[in-house]
Image (spheres, rainbow, N blue to C red):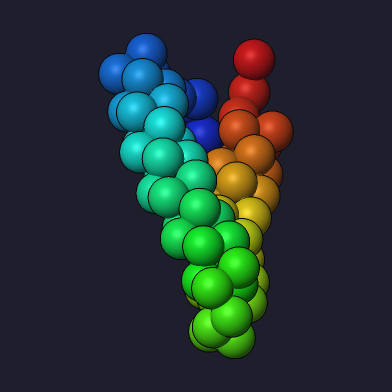
Length: 70
């Protein structure tokens, strides 16, 4: 069974969810920078976790988009 591509609604939903994820990633980076500046070493953990989760999501969506026909 082959992929026939994403519908307009599916592409719009992906854009919405990526915007939502980006806002949370920015909030996570801001929180981690605040924690690092305040001297809390847990800020580095929050920073790495935020960037890893966002990076994995970005690569997954990019990989799926590249495999779509058309």
